[in-house]
Image (cartoon, rainbow, N blue to C red):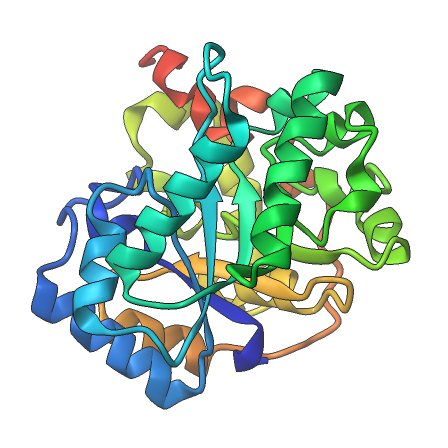
Length: 294
């Protein structure tokens, strides 16, 4: 199961995670996390050019022994040379990371594929990267699985990355998880801890999330009934799915990564609907800035 882990590194280059009170780790701490990941047998790393100094830090540490996935930021609407823009972004990322190629290059803004002309230009540019050996696979990073139905060229991509966790089960409930697998597309899931919120005690939630406190209380009761920690439940929920090829998760220390490795197990728990939500204000972090404090 450890081979399914893709180490998320947004926190290496920026303050990331709503429950993260320590900020980004020092270079030495980041180096220790990478060293620990390698010793555990983790072979995949997830990054992006928009993750602050993450790529530069990873390049300084040295990540040639890992398979890296990166993401192309939203392409400016006035950009006339999409191919050139994407090529420059990727070559700059490769230079910062000090590697020769990526495992996968994903488009960060899937909405741009709803424009047929732009979609064709983007796909052509990504295919050129693939043909030139700069990446083995091309794909899309999405926030909402329902958006997949608006992308006509979905079968032309190798990888889809999408949020999936105890509260946000849309990728599976929408039927898209099985469809993507039928298409032979690699599935990467992220946000399995919902930026750490799912590991929070119901009595210690950020004040903005008090309106959903009953949901955390239901989760806490279920965890007690099944003699599970929130970490065990989140990990089991993500890793038990055979359809999932990779699970992106970020950590803030070697100890945290060790704890995750020790708690990886597959058990046939029944996760009840009472700990599931369709409220986009909760399950999509993009909307958190609009939540009123109550």
